[in-house]
Image (cartoon, rainbow, N blue to C red; front, side, top):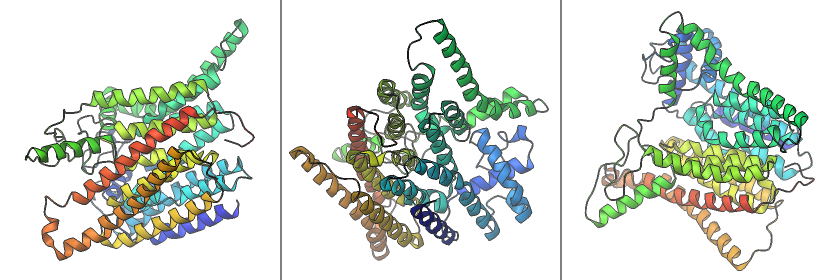
Length: 516
């Protein structure tokens, strides 16, 4: 491993170890409960158990991973894997849960190393890849707030690596496995489907019987590679269910857990997307009419309320996301290259984030991480990555709402952004721009400065102000910092979405000596 990789690994590990005592969300109890459920209960009851309100709602492969992580936990502290030990938070439990996140993140580290070997002479590529391990967004979500995105992004990057080295069957099997780890990756499934169909199944139209037979043979192999993980995921559940509730009931429970369509349009904290702007516009129009409504959403049934603008239905979100992903898939069909695949994945994720139903703020990382793989190709991609990374970081700050974590998240994020950004600007040259380009670049720079101001205002100034003026902490005013963060970041997300879409369509995707 090269020096930047070693440095990133050491610094990242030390930083994450030091953060073990920091704040953690209820997600830690969610995953502790999943360890307990998979350890103590028979497989057929995993998706039926309701002892805790934090029921298992990830696909079976993640449940099997939870079972695997539960085995050492039972030896370290038996209460960790006790189903009825609700909200158990002893230090032994916290330390073990933190350790599992760090260990499973090795999947991501290995994938980044594999990608780095594809560009051994590109300093910018290596900096970008190793910066993912240190990304403030991943640090906030996984190692403080608590989730397992490291292992999931690792599998995703391994699948993209398989595409990069032209191993399509491995690419398909890994992505199918990813879907069986967390179903949110359905958002980007169209990119993989089009790429594999166009680049592997039918790179050209069969011109004779031999070519047709070869295409059919490839189809059979791809079907096995794709469906195999689904069978391996679901079959154990169905087989074990024969001894109890029956396969149909268990599979219906699995489906209901994975797709809870009863939730509202927006989450309690508005993810910075189109619907945050839509909701804010509705509130402005209400204020102009002299009316008020309760909070737009708390993420529960029937709790998404609009006073002036029309209500938004799930089918509307689905249609908008489908239109966007179809447009990007068309371009990938025309140019089924590795770089086009990565950008299509990024834009599918960004589209689903921008217009999806009940989007969580953490989903923005699904666009940031893959974009890092091709950022060094041109300054246009670097600028989009720079903007999106900054937006993602600031939009995730509200996840850490305690004053104790404020200096950590602000200082660490500022240091990461300055060091990585400075290193890349020295290596990715900005081309001569037109007058319009100069103006756009100026406005984008001002927007980035505004993000920094927003972060200080909402995380330092506002808490200090509420301490001296308690009336600012009233129920009516408490949501103001969140709303400002959502709306300002949402405007940036929409701009990056449009900007990156234009660059993607204008990119000729010509094969170059550079490994992208």
